[in-house]
Figure (cartoon, rainbow, N blue to C red):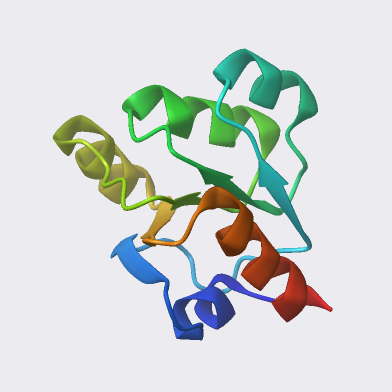
Length: 109
């Protein structure tokens, strides 16, 4: 699936545009940045509640495809500006981390 496919799913809102042609092949859930740095899955959609700029750095390091902020979390202003500058896709959803990840997983199946 691509980021455009996630954008077309109900319950997900694109907050920061990225490269809509990027591929998503898996889903990853983690709210601890150090763990995400060592366990992040390349080309995954990362579902988290960490709405700060350091999340973007971890995404780049692990080569995950996008960030999905769950539980109604919104990116802070610094994260939003940096994501826009770097072309990193950030989605938001009111779904729980589990439900958001499940929707991505089901869409991948």
